[in-house]
Image 1 (cartoon, one colour):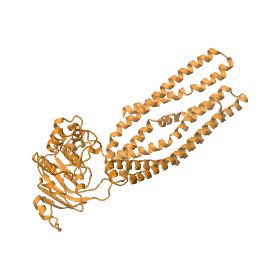
Image 2 (tube, rainbow, N blue to C red):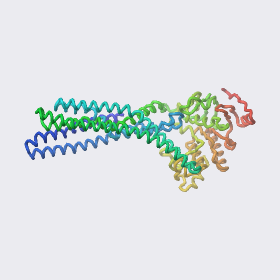
Image 3 (cartoon, rainbow, N blue to C red):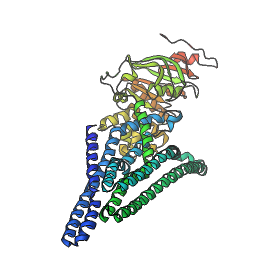
Image 4 (cartoon, rainbow, N blue to C red):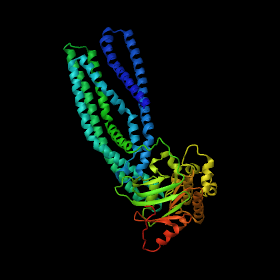
Length: 557
């Protein structure tokens, strides 16, 4: 990132100017004590006052620029990795185990907040500590050694602070994430929580999470504040000791009173970056741990972009010995799935609850990555298509057709910028939901609310169907598409499936109710995550009638 590199170098140079300007205060005191007071010259005093005023005005400008550059550097980092962290956050939501509890977006916010705060500026001031100590040595070696001893003591406190805060900071971040997940879950299921009188019980569970978070944060803050207070007291004590030792040296006639005051101020300035760093150490540890996780996200997330854009499929969908499970799972939920469909085919997927039907749907859409086997469109593997093409290839209606906060039209268009009204209305007509949308208060511009809460479950499902059909994707996968539909909705769904097949698309319908598979010509029956039967609809229905289901071998496998 050339811009970020240039900004970083500029920030370093500005920090150099800022630290050099900090020497103006000691020099001013030196001149006042050793020149103005001895000469009693008012013109000289006024000249020095005017100079120091101009210097500090310039210093205020420099510090303002430095703070703004720090903030903009943080924003540059967020711009560079924010979208990738958002994608990682969505994909980790599908994962199992510890990965599902991670929050890349929160980690990115923690890192950006730290970079935009005083912590990095304190670190940029750290290289100037030896310079200030050298100035004290020049004033007098005794004072220099005293200042070095104080710097070593404060550095030891900083190292101890690192080890003491490392684990509590990690625990605090984990507790905060756990509390936020529970908050999100409760909000997402607000209807159930209220209807079933669960507010009190869920609230108590939430308070337990809050208590865990506050406990870990209290431990972290107490330890951080302890070391910050010790460091501040040490610096103030050292400043006073420098004055005392300086007075002794002045009494011996080895330096002037002005040098004594200047040495005290420079010593305080030399130790200030260390003190500020310790004060920000908790945030530094949090940011560093967040950065470690971000690097893992970035390393684990493969670059799915392709230099060669494959032509969109038009002919076949071929699945061979497919096995898959959710991200992070150690075992496959489905295995041994093989079938082939051609343009215009419609396939129903039947089976009891827990047989793996929805898992198959997720895998076919790329939500889950195959652990074995392959999914091919016109002979090309699904993962060989550029991610920007997936929406043109696949339309998906999950069991829970949650919509996003926005208008009906935006949801149907999948929030694509510049989507035409004609394409949106065409998808709605294909889903036979145009009249329903037109009856809404603002038609296609009706706000659906968070998760589509302003619409009924049936309306959400039908709008979700229009979203799946938007852009005429080659493969349309519908998971329990009629779960919330009435007879009119069932008929509209059947017409939509036939329309997709008529234009040369492939439709896969996961269903329990027979009405959902009226418009398909093939069936796949699953049991225990395995394929049992695949073939023409009537043949499969005959084979799965009764309790004894005999598996048949697929042609060509």
